[in-house]
Length: 31
Image: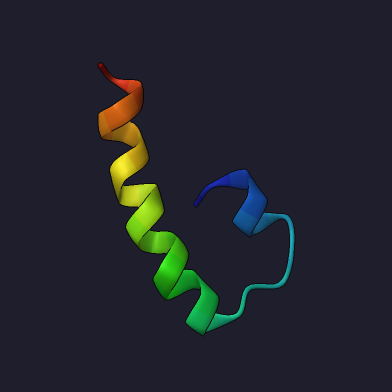
């Protein structure tokens, strides 16, 4: 998990929204 998630409490509802962003970031960073 990204450090900003693992370093603090996570709201499952928030994680669902963040998960979509996290899934896209590697594609952007790799270009």
